[in-house]
Structures are given as C-alpha cells and as structure tokens.
Image 1: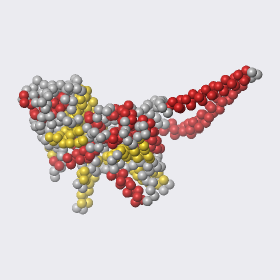
Image 2 (image 1 turned 90 degrees about the vertical axis):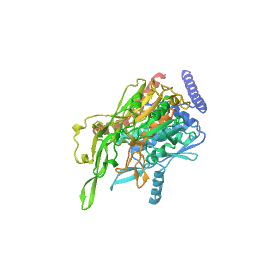
Image 3 (image 1 turned 45 degrees about the vertical axis):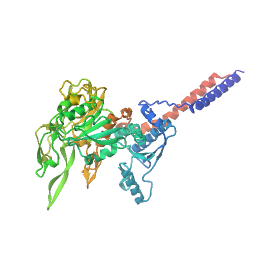
Image 4 (image 1 turned 60 degrees about the vertical axis):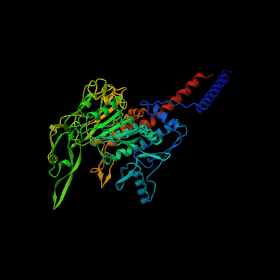
Length: 563
C-alpha cells in the first residue's frame, strides 16, 4: 500500500513538473526575457542597442562574409558574430535578418576574383590567410566583414580589428568585444534618416577638400558634412553639432576666436587637429634638409584656457612609419629602401576609453608634445601617446633625412608615452570673460555672449593635422591612415570616426565599446607537458561522475524502499 502511495505521488509530481514546463513555455511566447550567466556578461545587450533594433521600421538585412573553412580563431569570430546577431534579432521584432556567405565558394577563379573586387569596392578589407598544406604553404583571401543593408543604404562593417603588436588570440578577442558596437553602429548609420550636421571649418588655411576626401566620404554615411567659413560671420557655427578644424596654417584673429569660443560656450563640440610647427616633407626639398619653426596660429591662449597647451617642438620616435630613402645606385638607377622616419610616429592608444579601446596605432607626421593645464572644471583624458622610446627636439628643429642613414642610439630615445591627443570634457570658461570685446560683437543676437559654457560639452585636441588627411596614388585619394609604402591600414580612420561619434552622437552607443571579454587561453607550456592527461581527464571524468552518481542513487533508492 505504501509503495502504491509513493508511486502515485511520483506520478503526480511528474505531471505537475511537465505542466509547469508547458505553462512557462506558453507564457514565454508573450513575455521575452533572457538570463546571462556568463561572468563577463557577453550576452547582455546594452539598452541603447535594444532601443535601436527595437525601433526599426523595416527589415535590416546583413550579409556576413565569414563562411568557409577557417582556423579556430576565425571560427570563434564567426560563431560569436552569429550569436550576437541572434541576440539582436530577438529584440528586433522581426526586422533583422542575416545570412552567412562564403566569398570563395565559386570554383571559377574569374568569378571569385570579380566577387572579391566587388566586396573591396563596397568597403570591405580583405585579409590574407596563410594555410599549411601537404605541399607547403598557401595563401587564402578572406573578407572578415559584413554588409548591412536597409532600403538603398549599404554600410560595410569590418569585423576583424587589426592591431599592430598584438597577438592573434588577443586580436580575435578584441574583435569579438567590438561586435555589438560595430554591428549596431552600422545599423544606426543605415537606418537614420535625419543625420546630424557637422562641418569642416575654412578661412585659416585648413586642409582642402581633396586632402580630407576619404574621411568626408566615411562620415557622410552618418552625418551631413559641410564646409563653413570661420572668419567674420557671427553665428556661423550655430547649426552644427560638431566642427572639425583640420590643420590651419594662418593666424586666427580675435573675431574668429570669439566666434569659436562662443560656439563652445553654447554647447558646441570641437575637434581640433593642430600643427604647431611649420614643416612638411615637401619643405625638405632637394637637399633633404629644412629648419622647422613654430607656427603662429594665435590659438595658444584659448587652448590654455580650455585646459591644454601645445608645445613648439617635434617628437622623434623609434616606433615610426617608414618612408623610401635612396641608399645607393645600381648603374644610373637609384636603389631605395624603406627605413623608419622618426618624425612619423605611430601613436598608440592610451588607456581603455571607448574612443581608443582596441584601436590600431595611428600614423602621424611631425607631431608636437602637449601638456594638460589648469581648468579645474574640465576633465582631461589622454587618448594617444608616443611609444616608450621617444625624444623631443625643441624649436627651431633642423630636420634632415640623413638621420635615417645612422643607427639610432636607444639611450637618447628615453622619453616615454608623451601625450599627443586629449579629450576635454566639462564646463569651459570663455577666454573673453573680463576681456574687452567690441559691443557690436558681444551684444550681437547671433552670439548671445556667455562667459561660461551653458552646459557641459566636449572637445578633442590632437597635436598633428595630418592624422585626418589622406595620401594620393596616381591622382586618386587613398584611405585615411593607409600607408602606400607598406600597404598597412593604420587606425586613423577609426579614430576620426570614433571622435566624431563621441562628439556628435548623444545616443550613448559609444559606451558599448567599454565591454571587455576575458580571454581564457590554455597555457601552451602546460598543454605541451600534460596535454594528453588533461584531454583524457576531460573525456573520461564527466561520464564517470554521472555513472557513479547513478549507482549511488540506485543503491540509495533500493535501501529506502526495501521491504
């Protein structure tokens, strides 16, 4: 009788559990929720991302070119991309679809190459993958990227984040960390019909349009990009969310500074890329030598009031980009080699701020040092710095190509991590506070004079104007940050995009880049020593524990219900 009661109770419990499971599944069709049990919360989508995909008005279609036979690292990136898209699709209310495509699927070489060219023209950067075969080593072209399509818009997304001096495992991990930001940012660009307006300033010898052609094209996918004369027009900047002052070469008079200052006081965001020294590669001339002098821009006082001082000097860095130099002649033909040009430092990200987190090195030319000063209501965050093997030459500086013929003395390059780009955030004080300004300017309705910024605002200062410019090859503009001598893509374009997004976009999307996934790699030395034992334990221990648990449970029940 006792056994029948226990049996009936067990059946009731089983039916009850099944009923609860069915009820929970029924409720889950109406209420969506997910629980992320991972330690680094890698499956937790940010609120800004949920808002963007949750308010899509039509279907966004994403083509991911990460299908094929890949090494484990790329397989992990592919799987993580699929998981991220699945997560986003759960919040998109049916308005997000994707497919994975193998760009090398065609057996016809001409078709494959034509498809490769098509992807490259759409903005995806190929990667050469080296494979070990029985015959030796072979090269395989892959496109670790995606195309996000909405209506007539198509935005390229580079999923693999190249970084100089970083291991392949860490590079893959950094790429996975950035997946949410890269995908959501592209979706936002493709679906945003009302673009904020930004502008490049003119009137003080700033870079001409062709020198910023590439970055203008890139920014145009997210912003309405214009050019505005910052000269004598009061209120000229009022409509712009952010402005870019790119490498001016002539002095700012007080009226231009007043217009700029009051733009900041009214909450405007400014991105300034300033050359403090007058020197270019063209100025080296046929002699390969020139004297670099300070450039009088008349901006020192306004920058000092905002919290930064640009110094009149030049940085030489052992971590630098190479340029071709003639090392001899073969007959009448010059022989050239690529050698590091210490005046072209490769600037490294400083810290983990979203603007530079996981950013590749930024290529620069003739850079000056900077110091943060005063301005207690302004927070200063260093974004880029030199390597730990650098030195400073104060103005005037004799710049000579001949230094590439000599072996550098590392002991002379002993100044470390000097800042060259800074983010300023907070409440700024006007340089014209308690300073005489003509009443016709101060009291103009186009300005509305303020001596302290009406609300907290932001600006980024870089002590090199060439960070934003593009080179040319056969008359065609190259990508910003592309080194035509080495074929390397540096982080200039990504840095500029990040800065403008941080200055002009208040959606909070940039904070998604703060996500950090812990990289959990096996110790190669331990695996080499005890790898077989560890693998054997991983295979045998789990089933052995299940068997032991089953045996213990069996004997426990037998003892409990024995007659």
